[in-house]
Amino acid sequence: MKKKLALIGCGYLSQTVAMALKDGNFPEYELVAVLGRNSLRTKKFADYFNCKPCTDIKAFMDSEPEFVVEAASANSVVDYSEIILEGGSHLIVLSTAAFADVALYQRAIKIAAKKNTKIYIAGGATGGFNLLQTAALMSTTPIDVTITSKKSPGFVARTPFYKDGLMNITEPERVFTGTAKKIIDIFPYVFNVVYATSLASAGPEATKFNIDATPNFTGDDYRIEVKGENVALDLTIKSDDYAIAAWSVVSILKNAVSPVVFM
Image (cartoon, rainbow, N blue to C red; front, side):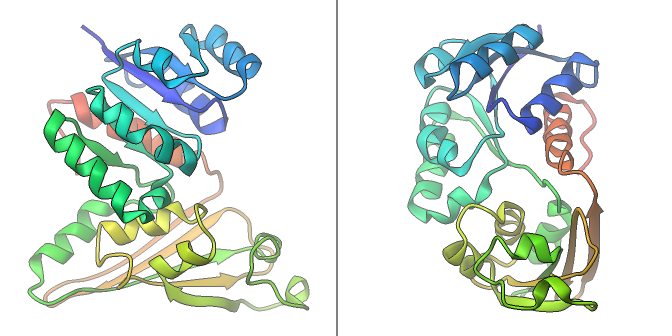
């Protein structure tokens, strides 16, 4: 019997997950529903991938999905996560920055424990969460975690960290230094992978975060440096296509039903 899968969002990431399913990458599942805010776009997606189009959460949950993938926005996590977990579905979250609302996060955990469901935090453009958690567990003192992200000057221009002359730089220039919590407080719901990484390691308030404006740069580049009592990690993840976030979801779905789990 195939597991019932449902998607929140009709954009590029949901399309990538649905196409991976259609191409046979995880045949243990069937796509039963998609939830979107635009009815025409949602129907077009549903028609192509042969699933139920939904524009409200009740109709979506009536499909009785066993796994729900959020690939839409932090607002979707805020609006629907508790309903999904209460309804008995496992939830895979990409917009992890929504859980900067600690009360929401704690409520979601409490519901998941009560309903025997799970909240899966997708790695997106960083990942390595198993190594980070391992480092934290094996150290009797708190681990030191620093994440450094390269961003193009054009990206930085759309943030509060832009300053005159940045578009003309010829060498990398640091435009932000703070913590995972601080970046979400200043610039909510954007740096999901940073917040997710902090949850898996030192915590949002202790995880340091830097942004380096880098000329002629495209894609995503995250360097995660960890120093613990008996362990040190230095991970760099470079991706040219943000579809890596969708493929991290596919990996979770495969591991969730596989007799062999790669952690």
